[in-house]
Amino acid sequence: MGSTIAEKILADAAGVETAEPGDHLVCDVDMAMSHDLGTEGVIGHLEEMGVEEVWDPSRIVCPMDHVAPSHTIEDANQKSRIREFVEEQGIENFYEVGTGICHEVLVENGHVRPGELLVGTDSHTTSHGAFGAAGTGIGHTDMAYVYATGQTWFRVPETIRFDVDGEFGDAVDAKDLILHIAGTYGTDVARYKAIEYTGPAIERLSLDDRFVLSNMSIELGAKFGFTPIDEKVTEYVDSRTDEPYTPRHADPDAEYLETYRLDASDLQPKVATPHKVANVVDVDDVEGTELDQVFVGSCTNGKYEDLLAAAEVLEGNEVADGTRFIITPASREIYSRADEAGLVRVFNEAGAVVTNSTCGACIGMGMGVLGDDEVCLAAQNRNFQGRMGSDSSDIYLSSPRTAAASAITGRITDPREV
Amino acid sequence: MRGRAFVFGDEINTDLITPSDYFGESFDVMAEHVFEPIRPEFTDEFEPGDIVVAGSHFGSGSSRESAAAALQAAGVGVVVAESFSRIFYRNSIAWGLPVVSCPGVTDFVADGDEIEVDLDEGRVRNCDTGEEGSCESIPEEIQEVFEVGGLREHYRRHPEGLKTD
Image (tube, rainbow over all chains, first blue to last red; front, side):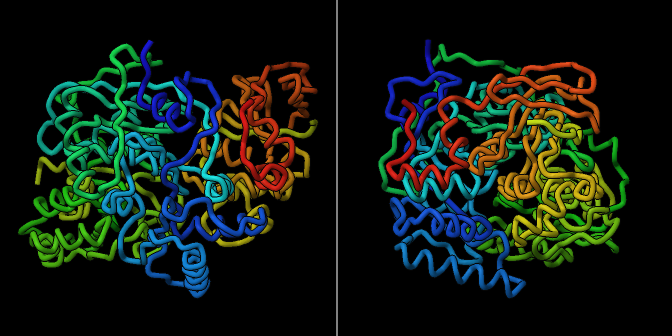
């Protein structure tokens, strides 16, 4: 019997021949990431554990992205402590405020390589499955243990597959597919499991679009979320790093717990309604919902192609009176690219606000906090109650295209009608 | 372990367990506000050793371990859920907070019932009705981490690392 991608990467990392679902393995980690919200907790645990030197400073990455720039004294002091720690430990892969959101920063700087095991103090570390790496989120204590030893334990997951045929229709994007999957199969469908997204429709997707699927795999409960590991991936990775790596592919006779077959041609633009990612409806069903704020950004939808889609819709239009439109590129590199392509000008002229790269609005810890009873349509990954601010605010989720169309009207709007 | 059951539904995410308003506070402070958005009276009614019972995918969402740490600081004896989010589950093991999956538990335990959880036997019993369910025990390979009180203590005792055999 063959093996899935997750089984192969975990077996490699544990130094065993094969790994079966249900096995508990102690694995050597290739890369470990903790961001500004995670690193201070990790430092505290390391001190308690009596660890004076981390296991390998070249395999640790610390991006300052969640509260960036700091807007409280407490946070500023916390960041100072992190800077001291990376200095003391000789961690060179430190990325200062403004560089970008952790998952994007890791990819752009060549820290993500096919076939490797990558852990981060952020649940959306599953994003790296789009680049052939087994990426997953862990807590601060688990991460302190990794920083101390380079090891962590894993239960080898079963793998499920979403096999997608057909062509994406007009104004339908990868985000609509992942929302459709969450709405149809539930946010429990991949709990403790790995996902492989396969099929012609997935193979045709760009890396930016595939990233959305891997990123939101955690919303389905998944440990890992892999999209195809093909030339698009290796060409990109080779342009970012000289480090050697070995891509791992699923065997043709690998065993899947379940294969779900879908057709992209059947999809409509989708919206997740408050307060669960699985509350998914067609955009038509909530069309007209009045919006105080629209947001395009986050690790999920702050990529260049997301900004391009938003700009295409917005060009020549204006953001509706009474509605705010906030746009956050996922990295400085993306910001520059969007600037050079004239997208930033389109946003500015339409009356949108373009911010520096940060997780801020998406997590309610920066520019874009929602007040009482406010309603926001966000191209991001989560719509949990209170996530972006007040407990009485409502968050709807959509693609950047749907978000931009809605910013123009001030109401949830089908992007095919703009 | 025996205590009063506080029953929650499905998909209780980490923002509902430890609201972001208290982010940056100590785990003891967060413990005074656990479940505040959905059950503000929880911390007044709860007594150390009482038991949290929940539906599917308990602890979903963010990887922040404040959820596990604050429940432990609040004195939760054990969390019994239909199923857990994997990051929350890992964080609980890392902190030494007992967590067990018991499919069907919300069918035979109601809010306020006295229940008994036997981790070794893998059994949950409703002392008021006599109904029982079986639960999955903590995997043998990571039992030691749990038994010594979490991953940090395990490291202090075994700085050479984890072992599976």
